[in-house]
Length: 78
Image 1 (cartoon, rainbow, N blue to C red):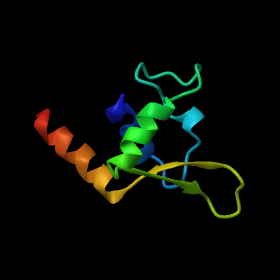
Image 2: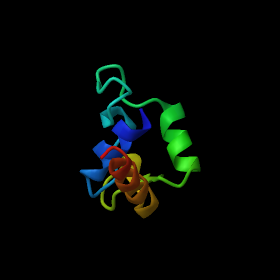
Image 3: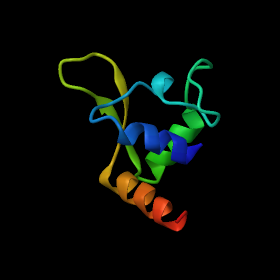
C-alpha cells in the first residue's frame, strides 16, 4: 500500500488530495489511500502535507526522501 501511494505521487509535481491516491488495491472509489497509510508515510518523511499555491485544497506530495526510497525499492526488485 505504501509503494502504490508513492508511485502515484511520484507522477505528480503538486499536492494531490488523498482521495485521489489509490488504496492498497489500486482503487480510489472507496475514498483512496487511508489516513493511516498517508500518516505513516508522512511520519517517515516520505511525503509532505500542504496545498498548492492558488488552490484551496490540501493534499500530499512525495518528498526527495520518498523518491529515493521508491528508487531503492525498485533496485531491490531487479
